[in-house]
Length: 147
Image (cartoon, rainbow, N blue to C red; front, side, top):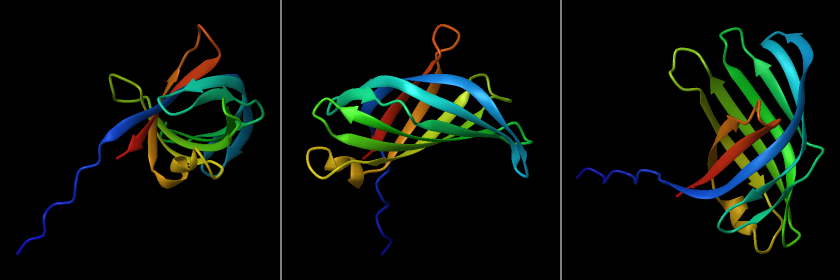
């Protein structure tokens, strides 16, 4: 007897973050491509179960591969309105070629302290990334929980 098919994952909106960023600085070429760093200056986030501020001090390390694909690896902290500090690791793949619309999708790892926001440690999150330039030196990150 065949097994029933596994459920197809769905997404549930977790939060949106507006993250202020500094200028992109070159770190030179490496064996995998050109490397950059972008400082994270602050911002804010809000969703149905959490809200607060993006703390300054994080950074986004970027790799521009020879095939034109950008790989981003951001590490930063967010402070919730109730005082919890959440560490965010956001890995993004950006493809701007051969598509009518910029493709920017990510996988996020969220680490929260025990307590109210412990659910963040127990789920898989994916997201989108949209630049707000030239109007603002910031990005909009929308995060979804896989359910």
